[in-house]
Length: 346
Image (cartoon, rainbow, N blue to C red; front, side, top):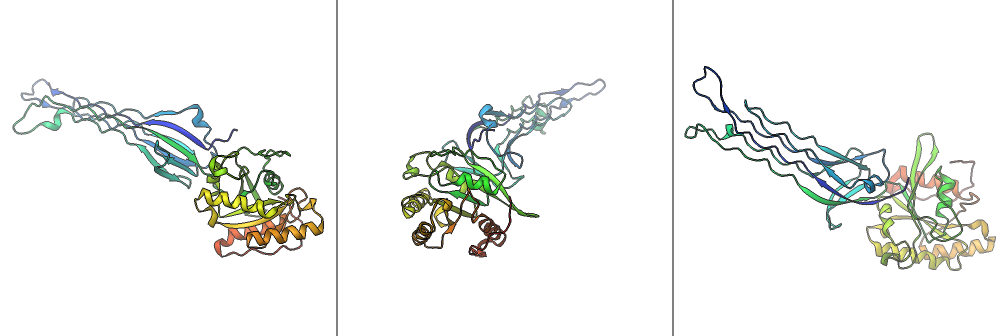
């Protein structure tokens, strides 16, 4: 299924039903009177977050959503039926914006969260509403109010515990495939990943977390270079960032700082998020190169960097346990140093 995280739709609520103009006409009843009922309310348009969706692809094939109109009132003081509400189901993590794509209407970040997008019009009054001591036979009934129509934008931000960031070909997809059952596209050229991928990492019985693989960033991504930074919104909800740096890169410090500059330029609090720095592809380095590049990367990051390899699995068990501890312990959890890897499979 194709991943789509942005969609534009048109919604329209139902119009209210018209009020009824009616009088009683019954045999042996000397005085009749007005008995026109009110019209029914038009249907509302709602958005609801559900758990079984993970993309906005359905909105590529249907962009127009209209709720039903209310029924008109009838004689004998019968009120018209209300129009059925229309519920648009969206993935958890969907944000709803006005047509300008800046004004936030709602953020549906939990299952079952709902937001009203367009209110149905009220039904019109029947002529029985206008009866008074001085107007015994009113010949007036109101039409129903029209429904609301608006164009809105849906923007999906994935719900993941951790996000993988780094330059293209840093090994993010390889790492995701190594620690989870996800099968992202992996190749030896830049920008292999064209859309975010999610993977569930199972550590033990009842212990798991979700990790998101974000397409690679290059210098100038916040200005649209490469794929740009539009997918960084999926990292905004993550508890921490796993920053991968290619160990075979000539200047690992420059590679690290390039991505950090793009995170700061993007905003959204990404630069302030907790960060786990990893030197990837260490299986391709000699012991001397590994030690030298770890030292340079740790100095650039201002914290100890971890040595891992998505291809060989080196360092992954310790990394996974550390991420699980961070999820379980929240902000108070501390990173644990690398220890001897024990047998572990995703």
